[in-house]
Image (cartoon, rainbow, N blue to C red; front, top):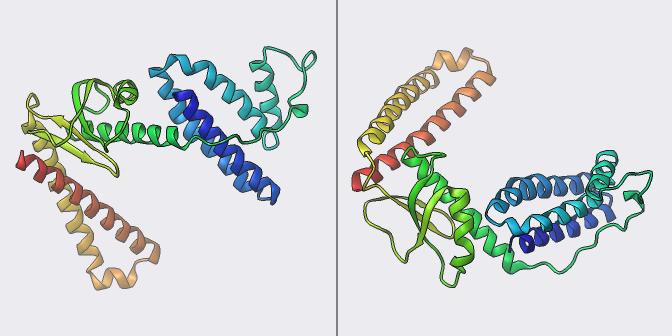
Length: 263
């Protein structure tokens, strides 16, 4: 399934790049290729292949085709990589310059929706783990509440591998005594039964106290008429932004503390 997904993403990139080139918007074409190669192929495709080794040869073919798509924008490096992937040399093989430029095939919207949900679940569980100071550690269990009609069997190995969870279970409602992350299409839960919450609550409380002092200091400066009248506009703008950021962080910390208090 991963090969199908990356092919669908590649076809979208082909379609958009060709459309931009036809109207001479080369910068937008380059941005499309950057988003696909870095943000989709490298950032997610290669990572997801850890849970689907059978897809690696398909990803290799897609990457090779991507070199043809990228060639007008980065001619030298793409020529070199294309020849390496072809296990050939420029002296003996056909140059990438005479290869046909990629054309888009039909885009598989179904597989795109499936993998968008997989990536959303992975990010959601990672956020959940951060709440309980598990960060990049592997945990035993996590639960996910998904929309109806989703192929959970296909999703499970990808989520377990990349979210670093021994076992993912799919549930219809929130579990008891847990931390929760709510995203656009799903909810993630990690049980707190075996976790020492006092240390986490203590850490959050210290963060809250530090933010309270920072907010009070910034408010004091910004409410001081002499400071506002004499300080450079750039300094005032920076302080206002710092205050906004601190208040946003405070709201998140308070939400986490409230959530733990309910449990």
